[in-house]
Image 1 (cartoon, rainbow, N blue to C red):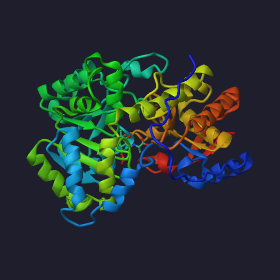
Image 2 (cartoon, helix red, strand yellow):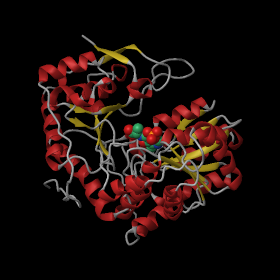
Image 3 (cartoon, helix red, strand yellow):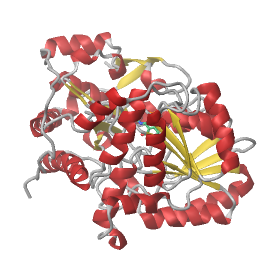
Length: 459
Ligand code: F0G
């Protein structure tokens, strides 16, 4: 079937010019960047798929909100607006603003993990893992086995493996586990959705054992769209009703608003328990700022209040998820392997399958990202062993379950022809895949190394 493109439910009022360097120039730039795409200047990138986080295009209403934003230190109007919208959408009485998702993690996780040894999640995003470790605990991933086979169709590859979760609780002791986290969508497994049935089941297990249940809600609206498409009970529900079901009964959530709230900066923490909220507020004042601005400027808070609502529009989500499905459709036609069915914010190309001759410790997904840049000025990122890093106890390179090169699509930014450029570049790379070499690390920091490590091609 020919890939379908759902037309944009908006028109374009303001544009940013782009320039494509020559192949020779790109080869020089990536070498100067130590073969780490995070060191590239954005002016040297033609299509930037590094992340869908904070790279979104805002609407006219959001830009109008920027002008209306109230910059008062305490009790700004936009604070009440965002509170009202967040309480309505997430159904939690206590909402704290922070400047992004990892700030929410920094504030909340040490509270939940105090005196505890473990956090268990369907999968931890890398900053979540880092904040679990910084709190002195260990992060355990517990995703369903279906997620590990990228070629196998499964509706909810983001789900928690509930049997394994029960087993972990038995082995490790409920008292040692500070929190059970459900990441929706499951970014590290490929932007894969989690079913409401699975959220309910996981929540019940957490409750039974007296463990806090937290949602990492970065892509709560994209998750809701998949639930509507794939979970029978919800096919006639509105996106708003499905979001309410996602958060129902959760003790708390952290959220990077830089994704589904379609803004460039922002984050939220939500909870139901007043005593927990008091602790959150205290840490927020120390690390982020007074509780009514939480590290944000008033203009960004107002844009966030508007974006929270826009991000739940079903027309918008159909176009948004449709972009992933179009790109994935083109790759499928060309026999390029990716996490299938495609997820909500990105196409995760399976570099382990495309470059089987490169072992995990020579970072096949990173190698593919470098090729994409050389080929067409496309910047993607490694979600594999390169990103996973070393075992914090032994210092040895860990082997990731996946070697993905992630093509994350910013919201409302690129057109169908940009997606075609991406597909064509990958098709060209596939033809010379066997000649592509791996990389070695020559310099690395101890934590979150992928941002700043330096690499060299293996000759
Ligand atoms: N949780 C998830 C599931 C995420 O995807 C991210 C960020 C965070 C937490 C942290 O949020 O960046 O606002 O501090 N993900 C981005 C990405 C960076 O590219 O996937 P943040």
